[in-house]
Image 1 (cartoon, rainbow, N blue to C red):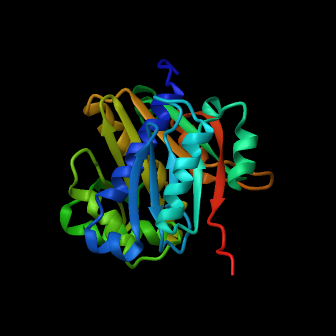
Image 2 (image 1 turned 45 degrees about the vertical axis):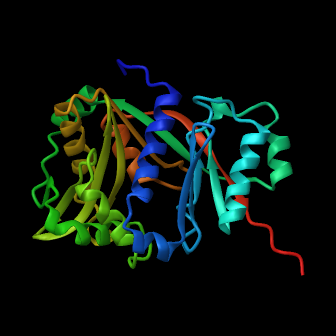
Length: 283
């Protein structure tokens, strides 16, 4: 890799994308899902009280402008308690965890869960890899998304990730017309089967929501979506690409991870998910 991507850049890129993805959602959807958000200590704190997937309540982006402290973590947990959030996840780069992190976790009832990997790359390397691989699937077409397909695109996104469609699809669709977002769709025989977008901030492009419906996998759609966004990022003046995906466990295979590695992304670090749960009220 020709460009060193600092953990601070990678963490803030993801945090801002998630913050915008949720806070730019239409108000009726925010109300239905019980969505609230705030900024604490340089990070973002996102709550979705009625989220049955338990995926979207996250606290991340910490350690960049202010250190992670017991007080900061306490403020975040207090926010979640006040919001009635059943469960939330702290996502903090290992480099930003304080020495007393185990004590903080014990005090707040935070436990370590599964891990994600943070991937970074350069636009030049990704485009060069895509060109060398000659990524032109015969039966998959990737195009910038047209506005009239926004809700369908949001629906495909949620179906591909195996999550509910009602309300969640509208959350995804809302980004299509928002400044800074660049959505793409993958088409198979005229059917929209894959999604991918990116949020551009300065010279950094955050890969987001790359997924393909189960029946359309194995055709190179996800890699083509990555390549299309990398080329667009280069045209927009971006030098750096940032992405995340689940870490592979023994005996498992994450196709998304390998697709990104093929295009020159590198694993910057592995980041555990630290789970917090709302204590049940005493009877």
